[in-house]
Image (cartoon, rainbow over all chains, first blue to last red; front, top):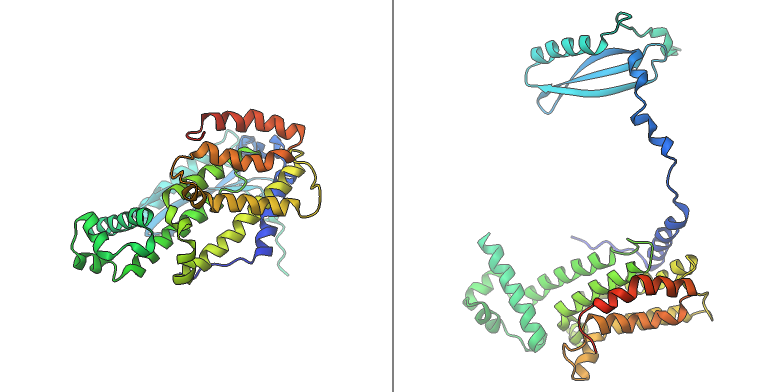
Length: 118
Length: 215
């Protein structure tokens, strides 16, 4: 393998950057990670199932999109199946389970995406 | 797997023979005798001595690169001390690499050119440690331009020629980690600020006291 060569000036600059990191990098505010625990908005989401073929398996993806602001969405891989039929059946059950809400099934209105067709 | 083991055995035996007798004085027959295989078997794995040296050099290169990659893992003086421990382990493992400097320079230009790239990095790292710790308030500002460049070079000389000076003084193997690290820290100590001295006393002194070897 050819040896990777970095000229001394670039190497010195690299060391300077490493040194500066200590003075410039500050811990982020803890609030930045709140999105991980802040999952209440998931109660107001429409659930859309999606089946994707990957590595010879059928993957069930569930997309949770907020029913008034559909740009706010999250996608999760739920399970993988060897047959497409099995994946479709499971996806249907899983979507029904996830979308279960006392208010009835929530739906996303396509107009809320404000898609520009021009 | 068997091949790998024999190869590794040959390399290990070569390193210990190089360390004991010097690179120039070791013959393939000796290496074969050392591990109890025939010279023909040895030639199957390495066609000549140059091939063995090349393989050892690859290991050396990897190990030096690994030591250099430990720059600024900790944002305090411990970082340099850790690297010094690694340098000491390295020079203990491959003394021939430092004792046969001229031999390597004359006969193995490939090894020498690789070594040079590491030398530049090593000195740069030592020099940048001064800048970093000065910024942290642990080291005083440079008394005169160029002083820290000279001290960095001096530290590099100490590390590189630690084994040859030991041999020259007839103290082969007597000076352990403690003396090695103390000698190098003593180059830095005069430039520490009161905060630097406090950090040194808190972090480095206890480590030196528990290091092996020395006076």
